[in-house]
Length: 268
Image 1 (cartoon, rainbow, N blue to C red):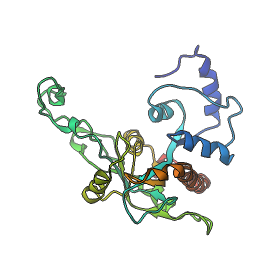
Image 2 (image 1 turned 90 degrees about the vertical axis):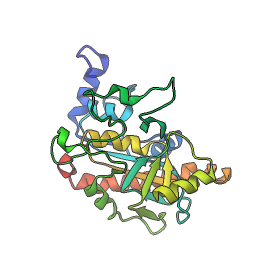
Image 3 (image 1 turned 180 degrees about the vertical axis):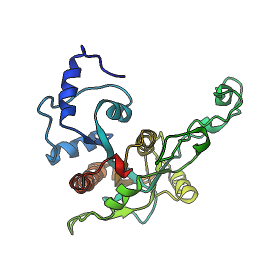
């Protein structure tokens, strides 16, 4: 919600926004934060080093600040055997693959049936779908029910042109990323995700970021550093920071390219 003019953060946020617009950098774990702070790439605002806000993070970021695009980075588990620890994945599509019961309109006694709450009555319930029409306002006739959320095309093309140093990890473009509300520790489920959805990595956040960005018609892109094999040996846990650092380095390189080219919502 909008802050009142009497709210102590109102003046701080107004001052920060006078220096905008911005790209929103979204990260999701302690290792991501440690990698970001250790990089010393970004300088805190003159008005406030940090602003603490509690809500749905990406939507609040878009609502409160003049955000021109979302850059999301983090680590991920590999489900594609061609990927190696430290590689960075830049997906072209992402989907929720971990929750299935909410898609069922019929259920056993005592469970919520979403079909009972259609609005308007008698219509089809589109919970979990997205209304995606990038060039115009949405109308009921333009709604699409889609499973794979597409990454912004122009930003994806820009990312494929990144020039990294010779010692940088391999950057893999155009793959699919699977997001679930669980940490995948089962090798059989890892194989199922790869064979059924042809996804290359799994994580717990990318699809949520994508859905909010698409719903607000804000350009976005995802960088995920491979830190382990999903459902594999627990010995790979020590590489979580490596995955975060490599993903951050790719994200920073991308921000440098997009920032110098004057990226805006016009590129959406």
